[in-house]
Length: 226
Image (cartoon, rainbow, N blue to C red; front, side, top):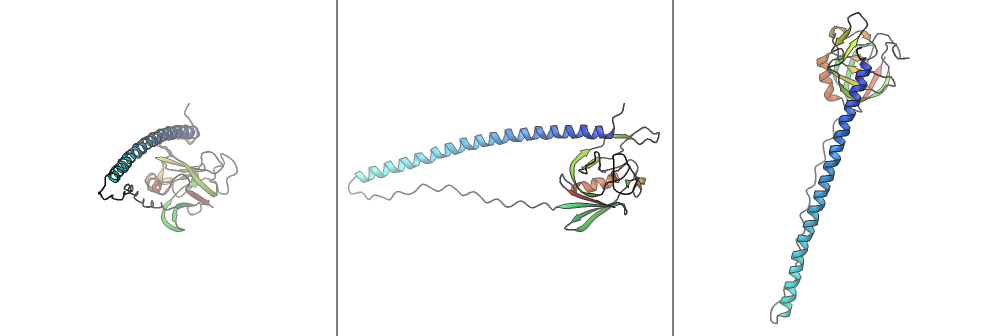
């Protein structure tokens, strides 16, 4: 039996979290190694600074014991070089997404100014989403929680054609809406853009979805209005 897109979505989420956990573990190990190396380096540096200080004190004492010789004042140990001040990292611009269902448009905004826009397809039914499977795209203020590889996902649209490869295009931008499986994705049917046809998601042409990705990350705010 073919897996539903929700099962594929959940499996991809689990694999992504496992990759993230492995990456976090690797980072923790690397931090531990760096901390150990820093402690070892600082300990060696401290010992090296103590040796010249003791030698200088011994030489001063010997000079003082010899009559007729001028005793030179002891000089302090050279100050360690100051660390270079790090330049502040450039702040990444915060983009927001606005989707207008009646206009079939997705807008990218920066400082409330539209900088990009593309056509979309939305749910086959108008209004606010009331239940799973009601074919409506929810309206409200949401945010991105995952960006998944959907290139191998399939879906049966119930039109007698069976499982369709590439039904979700290259990626699935998952949204936190209170409903499972709602997001922005590509399509195998670019001619559907500009219509009410989806089961609740927002469709884009595959190439335009790829153009959108640089403006989206986990946490990006997405507003969908009627």
